[in-house]
Image (cartoon, rainbow, N blue to C red; front, side, top):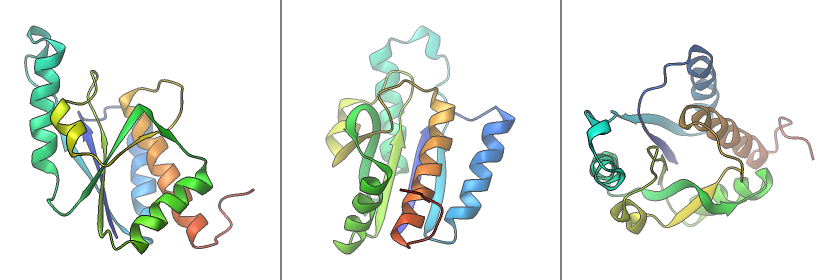
Length: 157
């Protein structure tokens, strides 16, 4: 299975970049994994939130392969335990889904077009995290899901 994480804006924190790099290496043992970065919208301070979401949405949709199932990472999405998230990913593979695209939106969320294209919304927590740290949390949870599926000792019940 190929899994793509699409994010809006670059990460500038060294500790997050190091963590992302570590989990990219770990994930490469389980699946084809890629992070696609959508550049920040230029002159966004002069735009309304809806215009900024629209522009980001166009770029997000342009970065997704047509064969990918789209899953939004959104605070209003479904919450899973780590084991249930592993089952969610595993079921996608069993059902024949070859590509998943998880998306972390910009500061104002997702455009209506991106929401309409998604098949699911997933919340990592009811807490609010910065867009940069969510990347690392998601990648760790994806790695954890892969090890759970393979029966490896990373996760402890």
